[in-house]
Every structure is written in C-alpha cells, then in structure tokens.
Amino acid sequence: MAEPDIVLRAEALRKNFGKLEVTRDVALALPRGARHALIGPNGAGKTTLINLLTGQLKPDAGRIELEGGDITSLAPAHRVRRGLSRTFQINTLFPDLTPIEAVTLAVMERERTAGQFWKRLAAHGDAIEESFTILSQLGLADVATRTTRTLPYGQQRLLEIALALATRPRVLLLDEPAAGVPKDESAALFSVISALPSDISVLFIEHDMDIVFKFATRIIVLVGGGVLLEADPETVRSDPRVREVYLGHGHG
Ligand SMILES: Nc1ncnc2c1ncn2[C@@H]1O[C@H](COP(=O)(O)OP(=O)(O)OP(=O)(O)O)[C@@H](O)[C@H]1O
Image (cartoon, rainbow, N blue to C red; front, side, top):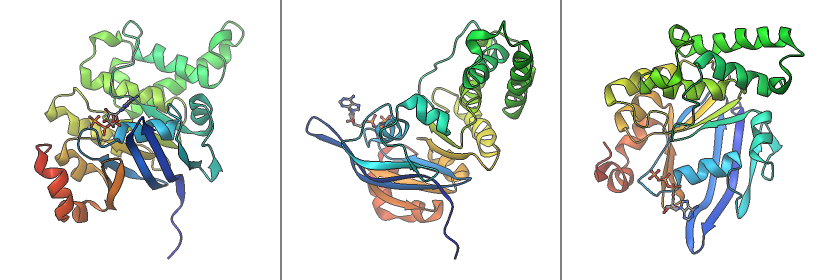
C-alpha cells in the first residue's frame, strides 16, 4: 500500500502547565484531504494541542512538521504563511465590517498589500474577486455586503472560516467551529466544511457526537492529554474505553 501523503505531523509533543501534564507524548499524522475530528472530555487538552500545532503555545518537547518541513519553533504568523491556519472557539470578527470587506482585507494582508491599497488598485480588484469566491464557497455570497453584526450566528462562524481560507491554507484547524450555533444549524455548517476543496486538510474539535460521527472520516480521542485511540468512526463508536471515558459523560 502506498504511504499516505501526510501534510501535518506531530511527534512526541509534550506540554505541562506547572505540574499539570496537558499534552502527553502526542503523535499525530494528518493526511492530505483529511476531515478528522479531535474529541475528548472537557479539559482533555484539545485546545492546547491546537495551540501547540499553530504556535500559540510552545511545546516543552516534541516536533511539528508541515509538508515535511520542521515548523516547531516558528511563530504563528510564519506557520500561517506556510499554510497552517486556524479558527478559534470564540468569535474574533470585526462586527462593523461587511464580509466582503473583512475577507478582502485578509486576502490583501496575505498578499502584503493591505497597507498600500492606494498604490495597487489592480491588486485591490483581484482581492475583492478572490474574497467573493471564498464567500461563495461558504454560501455567504448573498450576505457579502451586510454588516457582520447583523448576520445570524451560524453565518458569522462561517465567516471565521472564510477569513482562515483567505490565508490559502493547506491545513485548517477548527476549534469548535459550531460553538454557540443552534444544534439544528450545526450540521449545515459542517456540510460546508466537508465540502471544502479536498486539497485543504481539516482537523476539527467538536463536542456533538452526532456531528462527529456524521462528518469525520477519522477520529482522534484525547484523554488526560494523551491519545487514547485514533481510528475510523465505527471503531471509535464501538470502543468500550471511549464509551467509558467520553460517550458516557453526557456529551452525546
Ligand atoms: N494557559 C493555561 N495555564 C494553565 N492551565 C491551563 C492553561 N490552558 C489550559 N489549561 C488547563 O489545561 C487543561 C486542558 O485544557 P484545554 O483547554 O486544552 O482542554 P480542552 O480539551 O480543549 O477542553 P474543553 O473541551 O473544555 O475546551 C485544563 O485542565 C485547563 O484548565
């Protein structure tokens, strides 16, 4: 069998907060095109792991590779430039901008033309066009010129993803992308995530097990900072240890 094409790899990652071991020898290999879920009970270390991968936190030990290159000591902005992008659990939007304005600025930021728009009107036009394409991909074309604060929360969460896409990521790490979204709307949000271009590899944190089993092609179960199991959804669903530590604790 051919080796899978691994786009993001972590080896022996460790992170302690004082005496608390929050990331314990975590290894992870995200193949190109992945739609993988990272699950685990509250406090399992999921967000910490994302923070280590994106550079918001510095690991105490271990190594992280993106497209085969060592990024372990790179600052977050440099990782973004290499193609590793993320969203946060909380809303980070500018409420008074419209989606087209916000995503266009993000595209221009990527192109380093954001501070010199008066010099490069042509670049501005290209950025608006690219921004519109991204918004269309996420089903936000119709609301592109509405003020962000007036959008339903589900669309605001999609706009967070649009801003991440403006960096042209190879890997997208989504920390509870549907946090705060009504349950009946989160499936629609995850359908959009699933349908992103297959050359974008996605790892998402999600608590709703119905969503996880519906949209994840593979699931990593984190417990007490360590990987308990990484497997396909069926295997995870029927694993008694997972039931014990996670599914039985009121997250379903
Ligand atoms: N900056 C920090 N300093 C000290 N302890 C921290 C810090 N960040 C997280 N922790 C602790 O590390 C543990 C893991 O936190 P983390 O947020 O990574 O878990 P999580 O699995 O994402 O949880 P949740 O599902 O509630 O979002 C928790 O016990 C938390 O209190």
